[in-house]
Length: 161
Ligand code: THU
Image (cartoon, rainbow, N blue to C red):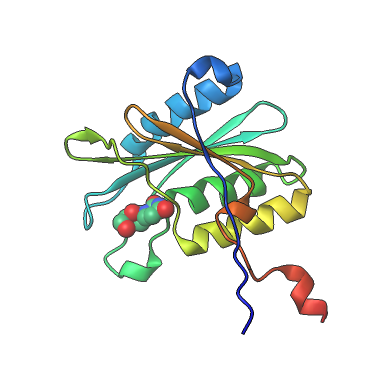
């Protein structure tokens, strides 16, 4: 058998000066968006902020439901809202932060598989790589493009095989 390895890369931001003003604002807004979470079952409050090519930002927060699978993650709330309000606008970046009852978590929260799949589709739909910022209380990681979050993914080109 032949072994093949896939490498992924991500960056730890050393100084906020490395980012554009829009990106710095996006990171701040993702933390603020955790306050709009409705998470009475998990008490895990996730905020997502999406930056569109127009410079506009759209916020989302996880919304839970007593019938658990009916809830939705913050990332998909924000992306679906952005894409339905501005279907012509490409998504440039998304910042994701999480909090518990004590406040913003230091740990960086990586998006779930379903959110990665939706980010991938958004990237392909607008033919624009999305910058993904994982936001902790102090640290920020940057992932350039969904390919690094979801290697060997299923995508729409497989449907025409
Ligand atoms: N959650 C998100 O909003 N985003 C993620 O990437 C992971 C999980 C939400 C779903 C649920 O409301 C809570 O966090 C606990 O899983």
